[in-house]
Length: 250
Length: 114
Image 1 (spheres, one colour):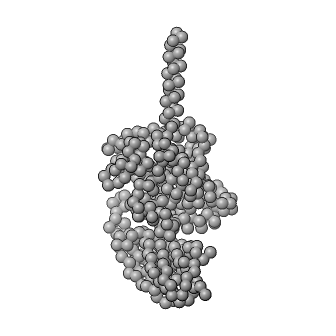
Image 2 (tube, helix red, strand yellow):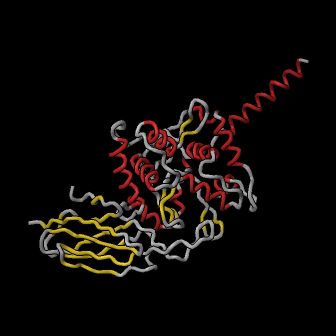
Image 3 (spheres, chains in turn brown, orange):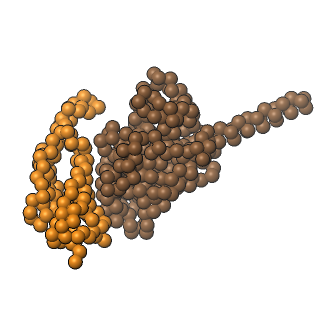
């Protein structure tokens, strides 16, 4: 009986160790590279120069909206985005878009902005831009949340016609090529970003939906909670990388 | 701040804050516009209506700098630069109009030293 107990304890310890291990990031902190390192030199130059960066058009508009609607409560825009996405007490994920819409309905007392609408993109871009150079500071217990567990399961699940998971490329094959494109580490620190393929600026939410499309699997709706969970997971993966919105991506 | 970009509704016009008379300098213009060619389709397969910038003009204190006829080869959110020299302080004004009749404008002032 005693040996059985010992075995059970041993298995449980292994289980805990395994759980602790899965909460370790696969990419070492000093090996983290933002997507900017994987785009062409001309896009990098376009991103670096604010005069050239088309995302700055959204920053300008967002600044005007911030001064009109948000400045009454928020003294300064810098740093407002670094704790996002965050968890609510009941375990939901609050993304930047959701946080803005909560303010919009409760404080500003207007109807919530639609996903990818011009004013919401402008505000998110301005706020992300205002926190440039800072890093995500998520609560330490984020890996114990259900949202994180759900996101990790989605991130590692092989799906779609091509038999990929997010992890197969972005944790294991980054820097290599998939046809003409260099695989990035899949960090969202440059978003909202101007994407040449879109010919416009878009949110991380939209980028993630484009990932699902690229994997030839079911594309979730913009309001699907799994996308918010994934945003939290990506922020956790990218901790240590400076925020750099609005980035320019291919 | 003279070197802060002029805040326009849909554009940025950037000029150096201070120049010397007759000295060449770079002016940068970035306009927010989809430049829809009419060849693309939306998720339902319907053709997205063409909407291109059709005219774009720049003047300096009422004197034309250039008049451009812009077409579908121009990217969305077009970025244009040009080199110019002026003799006295003044204001650059850009005006544009698209196929749907939406018009926009932006201006920025430049000061000549001395």
